[in-house]
Image 1 (cartoon, helix red, strand yellow):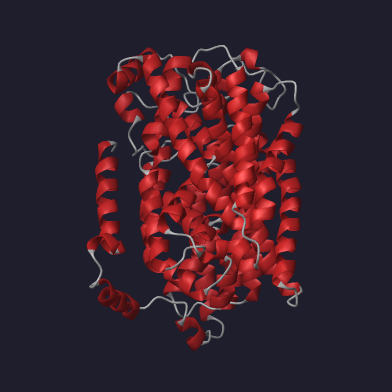
Image 2: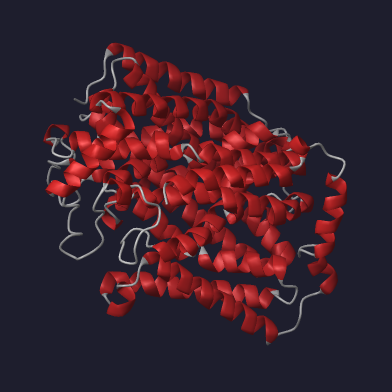
Length: 572
């Protein structure tokens, strides 16, 4: 089942060497601005595709299919809600980011608050990039390639993947990363469409057959979904409930209130505060291209349910009882995984190996590796930017632009080692890759989001309030993690992870407000440059009057919201 033909191997090798060559040929490293922000010359299609490609990484592909296999179709809420977040980001935050000319999000935090918050946020972001984005992408690559090449150790596979991604990231910088992401995004979408087509062909009967198959399987009790039934948690009773984006209060993945509170919170951090994503928009040639690119990325997120989530549902119908022991995939306890239900993270690879013919399999595996390399290279570049601009440059301000580029390249090498070392711990934390990703973000993002929101919309928020709230939020997050590990507070452990994220957010807001009110107000002239005012909206309205509708980002945003509402309405 997990064998590649000669043509498959040839396709993969041609792609790997071709993308590395192309990435190096697109390098920009004459100055630090060229290396870290691509010279700020990116047009809106490039910005939008780069955002989409960096977000829909290999870990997302595997994670979406895994949760769809477990009937967690409401994972799509993270995808469509990105449209709402990106519109809010384009209207309120992006103008301040681009006008300030910053390289990093922590640098913007310093402009609004002070240096203490900058260093803390930068450090947290670097840790998150290594633990979430880079390590998860390497983990996915190791899963697929280990199945294809069982004689090669997982450690060696991870090292090879990391080195391949770093091969063009280190010499080329952000321009190399983004230019390769455009090609990789196209290949990724083509591969996803092909996989969906062959999955429906194997099932026969199209969408209606899939829904009838779900009804039959659920009615017969063929699917137990692990321990969920024993714990009395929500299990969909029919196909309509499986595809419903609104789930009851006892849904373990995303209850209805999580869609209203938790998803916006995590989404706002990921799209509007995370250096890994925002850096692509910082490279836009101007504000218009940045806004159009953000909206374009939101549009690209909408079809994900059909080409990346539905295949996971089809896998449940086609391969729920399939014996996969021949894959020799080891579980954390050392035993070999016998059924797909025991190791849902293998859903995507199982679909690949069972459905795709020779040649196309190589193309889609190359696409999966493309997504992995896209994510890894992006996080390498963003994290090295943080290390260089937020720490090295502050410690040695006399360094030249070329010396800063060299420091960024060395930082990338260090990140390669750290991310590779963390990969083995991922499966020990969660049996769902998507669950692992959201769990880490839920514990790290709320204090950061509170600082950004209060900073933009409340003039009284000061540096002391920001720093103390970040520390308080971080300390409480660590306490919740320790409680999960050692059962310190059983009640707290029973709370849904999205509720914990909301609790962290509220605590951070309260601490920030109380400390700010109890300490000296910030410099009003400084604050005026980084806080939103109604006057800005009125000025922008006048500027947009002369623009045709297709260049007016507000009209485009409304059109995008209508399309999103129509699509989501089908699955409510």
